Amino acid sequence: MLQHVAIIMDGNGRWARERNLPRREGHLKGVENVEKIVRKTGALGIKYLTLYAFSADNWKRPASEVSDLMSLLETFLVKQSAMLHENKIRLHTIGRIEELNQKVYQILSRIQQETSIYQDFHLILALNYGSRNEVLDAVGRYAKAVQRGIEGISQLSWTTFRKYLSTGYFPDPELVIRTSGEHRISNFLLLQSAYAEYYFSPVYWPDFGPDCLESAIEDYYKRERRFGMTGDQIRQERTAPINSNL
Image 1 (cartoon, helix red, strand yellow):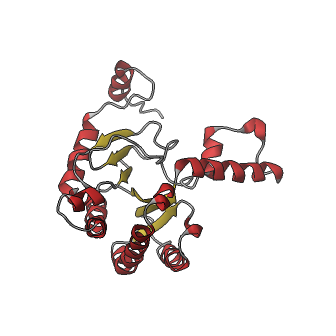
Image 2 (cartoon, helix red, strand yellow):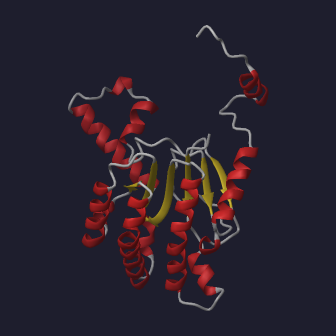
Image 3 (tube, rainbow, N blue to C red):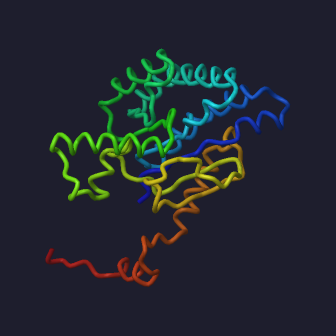
């Protein structure tokens, strides 16, 4: 069963440009779409949803646009706090959120703490996130653990190392969606998506509604996930009789 969907939300600016609107209007419509997708994901029984909300490289954008993005993020968090509690959604973040402005950081920390009692649905916002930075940070944490004698170099494995990633306690995404017609992964969950299925939608994020999400998930379930094995092996596993003596 599909447990974890990750989405690269892209196309706000082009959505606005095609309508002769300021880029801020595109970002505003994109923010409004988040709630629809969060609700639909929960309704489909998917337990984890990761949204790529602000890349570590987005700081390179014009200062006015970055300011607008931070303002919209603050408004979204304040406005949607009640929705998170209403639907028992736990909020998490990945990325160097301590580098965000202090007010946004404090709001994020407060909501994460308040929603930590919920376990049925997890919303993960990737903010000031870049997968390469995440790996560097994880290596640093692992090195410190080795220095303290908590970990040993000779015992290093993926199972051990993944705990030091910011996503260490979430299952890896099975499906990664990118909107807007771009075919890049933009430094997003590079290690975690090693065996994920990718779905590239031509639809800009503001228009990527619940029906688009359903189409992506329907496409996912048509695929055969082999994890290095052959199709015949997978089919044999599916049809193998269950040992009733176990």
